[in-house]
Image (tube, rainbow, N blue to C red; front, side, top):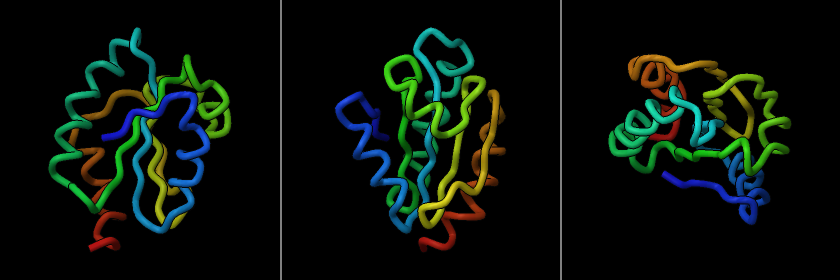
Length: 110
């Protein structure tokens, strides 16, 4: 799982344009649901390996990226496939919700 810092904002924009499946978690360190989501994302990163790229964006450090994605609440998880946003999950969800979304799009990358 990659954590994007301010110097890497351009890299994230480029990554989102690639053809694979990318899950981006928009959150902040002070947000309790965001902290709860972190171990779930780590598990998903292990489970999906090279089929999905998982990226964490700190909305406090990169508010322009959050604004571009239309993030209004944290955590917001956006899934991109083929360079296009395909799913948006707002708020903390059970792991199975993230798996369901990734299974729809990561299978294309198999």
